[in-house]
Length: 250
Image (cartoon, rainbow, N blue to C red; front, side):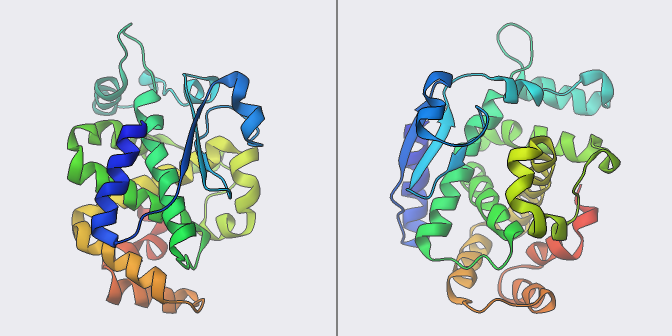
């Protein structure tokens, strides 16, 4: 993981002419509470002291995300099985969660790069675009591990089972959704993963670099219409589609 993160930083140093300072902690369950206040083991996160924290082993949170194959279509089940089967013939979500370290690294680019995210959802979508862009450009063999689970979650989750579903909900309750409703928060993240894939497919590296520049230079907080117009004209329509067509992401 450390080697991969070094490669991510090297890639974006060339693309963005910026390099964040990050300390990576890969923690056992015994060491988790010594280094983070996050309430449960397994959720990758970036802290305010420039530290990226990830789990060192499989855990209950990851296991809770293992989907029931009999609850999905054969096509979805085949994708999940292909992406996450372990050597024992079971399913293991580690290949997906390991990649989320790159998402958390994206928060370092945000915080240390002086970006103004405009909205909470952009603060999470941006790292997912950074993650997807790196994998697609440099390690495309990992795309199934990155995309199969989010696509399945978006396709099979009944919104009526979730407490929060809108982007406005996220803006209002952001600080409690992750710690108190992790699966609800995971649903949001999966939608951002799916959106990030489409944004990359439509705009590639130039789109991400344009987004970086816009978030770095637009210092004033915009209203919803102004933000959509800015994203559409200065980055790409696919990015503006996230707030415009949130309910249509699939």
